[in-house]
Length: 124
Image: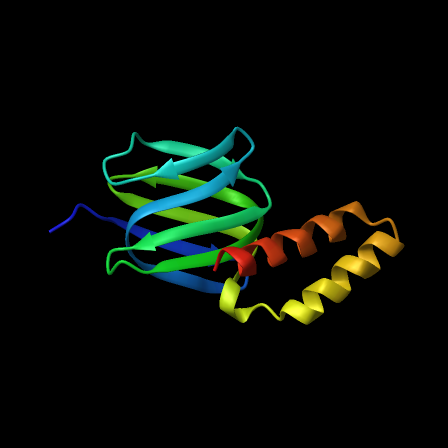
């Protein structure tokens, strides 16, 4: 059996995804990081960006994450996000409209959120 780690992706309002994985890739303030079973303990600040989870069954879960923290110890990875949504929950047309609106209003934060949502869908 391949080595695995337990992953909990939690948003402020709900549990988004929980399960076993072989690799998780996330964006932190220090750059992109990949966490595999046996990784050194770590604590990091999440940047807005897609999180990619390679499940133990060989599938891939992608989520758009906006801010938060991640911690890893004892083969347990916790991603505690301010906002997180799975790529297959994202309405692509709505995200594209939000991106256009943000550009029109010169709202950089909203533009970044919409871009992250669209990148998560594209990576899915």
